[in-house]
Amino acid sequence: MNFYSFFLKQIHFFISNNYQNFNLMKKIKNECDINTCFMCQNCLKEWHPAIAANKRNFKAKKGEVLFNEGEPVKGIYFVYEGNFKVHKKWGLEKELIIRFASKGAILGHRGLGSDNIYPVSATALEDGIVCYIDMDFFESTLKVNADFTYKLMMFFATELQKSERKMRNMAHMSVKGRIAQALISLQDQFGIKENGVIGIELSRQDLASYAGATYETVFRVINELLKEGIISVNGKKIGINNQESLFLLTQDVNL
Image 1 (cartoon, rainbow, N blue to C red):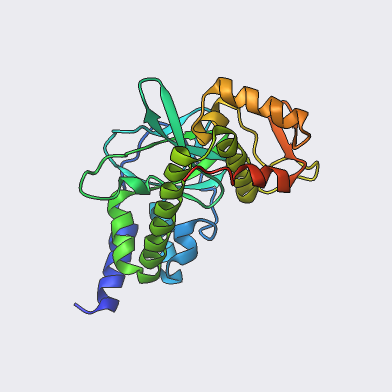
Image 2 (tube, rainbow, N blue to C red; image 1 turned 90 degrees about the horizontal axis):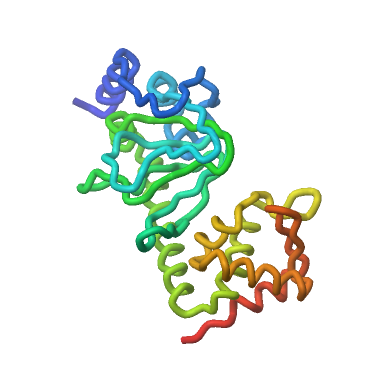
């Protein structure tokens, strides 16, 4: 069977078959535009009808869990609206936030592999909408779309580099430096709003989990940065007033 025949057969198969879907979240009418997410942007246009036939949109409420660490992998999620945190258990009662995912981002891909379980959890930081793709269809998408598979591999490589850098920082950087780095990373990812604050609102606990620190330490360091005029705070909203001073704190590394 040549590639073209295989390609047509795959599209016909996935369009003509109905899939059982989870009822963990409220299913809504198809909202996404088949152009925004990481998969749609890197797949062949001819594959988009298959994606449209197999995707399922769900509404996630603030605090709702998409999947839990240790659960069997059923599928992959793409963020259409809202912000989500990807986190992992750290000790008995603590968690470490690995990364944040916003519009277009992929969630659940860390579950790919022989173990077939999610090694992390994903939770909505605010009300949002996700697009769910069954694992069987996702794997067929990888086989048909070489460019998407390559981009996913490069994404994995970038994530690995970021994870290694974060582990290095936790081992060698002062806690104040780690909190400063967390604020800079959040600003780089979510930008700055018109009122000068970082484009995502986080609780002090989530900021602590992202920086690898305790709540008490984050509370103390935030107050220190406020007194030094480096940042400004209004509830959960944080603005960076002195980028250079904040960056200098991240250079405090004990090698």
